[in-house]
Image (cartoon, rainbow, N blue to C red; front, side, top):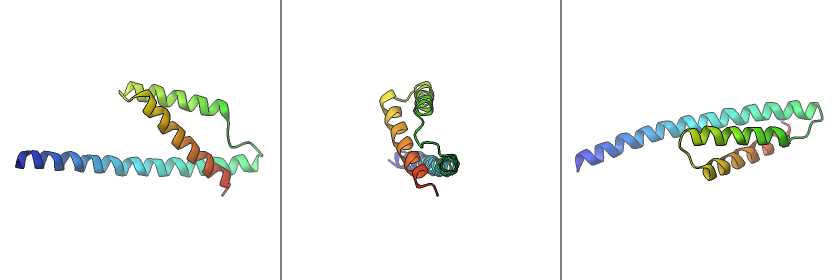
Length: 93
């Protein structure tokens, strides 16, 4: 039982580390989205760029499936990230 507990603790610690990195990368991505939003606002460019959104979504799906992730999960993840990026860009801060 101790071996199981130790193994679980080790894997969970690794997951915690990955989660921390994941959140940090998302925060950085949204900082970049904010910078893009400022540029778009200054240039009077629409926040949503359908061609770019489609390109990014296709890249997400390609990368995700290459790493063994389900297409549905990747699509949902993209939609969440894209929605938040658009919200951030719309603030124009």
